[in-house]
Image (cartoon, rainbow, N blue to C red; front, top):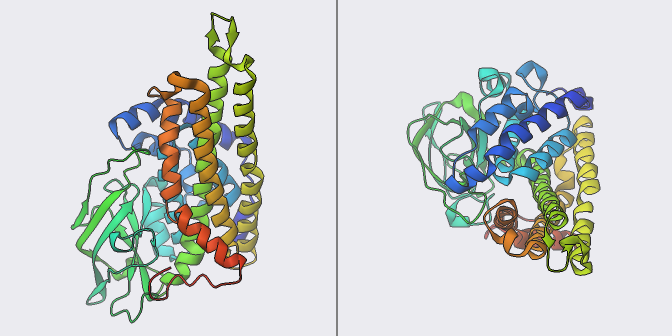
Length: 398
């Protein structure tokens, strides 16, 4: 992947196209998809048609060749209207970027450029046996001549049963320790892929259900990177783009909830007092506190995204800022929860009814649990603060 492509800045017309898609498609489908648990395929198809699903891909592979700042901004704008679509988008771009960073030319041609870049990808990493320690796998690939066979029970895979390809993490054949990990690109139509049901409190349309790989055959040409390179891929391929995108989606959820709450307080009138809700000091204070929280996120996001671009251009590991990216994810998740709760408070029973504010409250709760969960992430941050190593791969996994 050419390092100079990230110098390109998205022109205004690209953002205009993105905003038009969000307004005409993503926003219009959000309530229906949440109510029915319907996967937002139309939304992703519209994003693909505009090139935004290939935001970080090189133009020669059908992408826009833009920056991490542009990717994070897109995730934020999508998240303002629909967290489910935002998460599917982030997982796709993350999977594609992992191929960009560690894949070969053949893999990029077949998985990134195929069908004009409309193939949908995702990560498939976590396992039930290790819970929130998604980097630690017990499953192990087996050899089939020069090729591979996967048998794995993955617990949470966004776009499960819907993706065209999965970037799957598992132990290498004959692994001697838990750090001997390999990654594979698995065709979503391969025999033996058995997705489970997704039914959750929030983000009901992103289909982050379990998925069973039962004797799935993977040709050697679709091993991503070298055998045993998985630890490097986790640190420098999966984590950075995932964390900046995830935080941006939750920032969007927070902003969307605040915007909806302000709109309601301006429009709802207590006729007995001839006042609208915004005339009450207590309401304004709740909104003011929420806005202060939301405003902490954009500058931090932009700084981290710019640093990711800088590290990439310099050929340095993006994991150099793994802890700051983790801090951003934690803070964005907590801000989304606090602002969504404040939005319910100021809108009362009207906000509690099914709709954008009630949905943002349910969706935001997922932010706390998504790996690394805020509980695990705060321990990472604390270890860094007191000078202890992260040690993700020693016995016990955390």
